[in-house]
Image 1 (tube, rainbow, N blue to C red):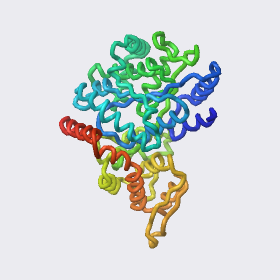
Image 2: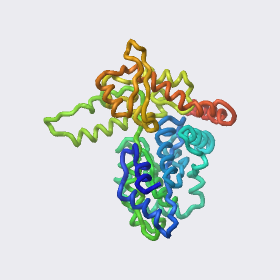
Image 3: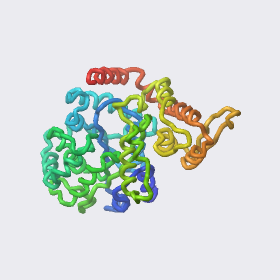
Image 4: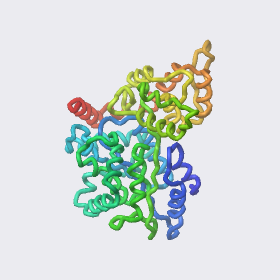
Length: 397
């Protein structure tokens, strides 16, 4: 695979890469150093906070597969300490560890397999094990903290899913420094995350050249990690009235920059969430659950922006399909063959495709695509892991 092909693979369906120039430099350098090529390392971290939904299981893991296919060694941090700090699963560290090495590892591997990947590609790291007796890690946490102001740490608590300026316990202010230290101590050249984790990645890049304990290197050169931010898959629910107001623009006031900022905030507020089960499809949902959730989903006729079913078509379907066929009765125009997301958006915007037909296609597509995951969690140890997680979630509501 050429460098250009690798760049295209890693870059596809991303929201942002910081920076494309750094990405190209890394890939070219890795192919040329010593005539053998230096092994590049990728990382993504997950809080262990509930069932795995399509945003984590398919969108994130598809990008993990893209990195693996490009020859990058992929790592998944099962972030039990971060989960504990963020009060998830009742804040019980022992339970969080059990879920991390049991259900979560099993689920991510099953989702990766659905995407055509080999689970043997995946290198799992349990946070608490990585930090145990690791002086270098804790030195790096302190060094990152010394290089970052308190006010910036306070602004960065949004990466925990918490509102900026809200009162929090002190441990949550350590969370961003720990996340940044993960990158450098692990020697990860690529920090892969959703756009909601951008602030931590920017701190990492700002601190990179000043670190003494665990600088990131290509050859002998100290480098900044490349931040690869992927899309936050929209949840199935309707935006709130307050959110809907954000979509309104006022051209006369020339507020385009403010509008774009608010638009991003709206998209983030609409993201799929484990805490809102009907807004999400989980990787092992039954056929009936998938169809029920999608049937009742928000999908306004003729609207393509802030429409979760259009969003899912772009990031779940056309990420792997060149064309699709939407089945319709002859009286409604017969079957419709669509080539790519742009054509789908055009047809839908022109009201040439009814929401119910699009929803039915999406439900049928995901039902079939997720069949291996569903079957995997319907038996054996995987089924027991899921049952234990469901009990834990019920008891920590």
